[in-house]
Image 1 (cartoon, rainbow, N blue to C red):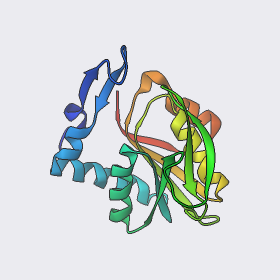
Image 2: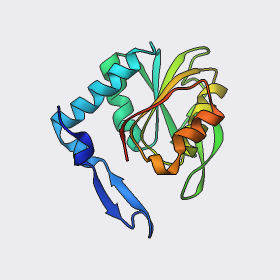
Image 3: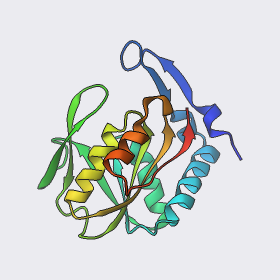
Image 4: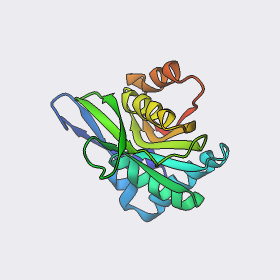
Length: 175
């Protein structure tokens, strides 16, 4: 087993001064580490018997698409406003850096479909809260939220659980 946590690199003052960015690319670039991360995310996901994986732009797509492939499931995109070509539903998605909007195609989630949402990292939880709400508005049932990394000091998981108490929030690595 590879120690995935030890592979993550701290980048000070990115994307703005005072922020320590957790660079996950070493995990993605190493074939054994990446496959181990996907295997671990898949082991968790199987417990929830999902029908679909949805992931948040952009690094969430890397883990979400690989997880959907591993589980042989469909994959839905949660993108920033204005990047999807067909009719969408839009939701306010404030994050730690700006006020943004998330969108998904209206037909990306079927009614009552069991969905696991994937992102690369949970910080303040605001992106996760918005993504869960978006999938619910599309008629999906969010059965879990998974991320590779959780920044525990920012208490994002607590915020997500307060807002969506029925959704388990899980991460492989905690800082």
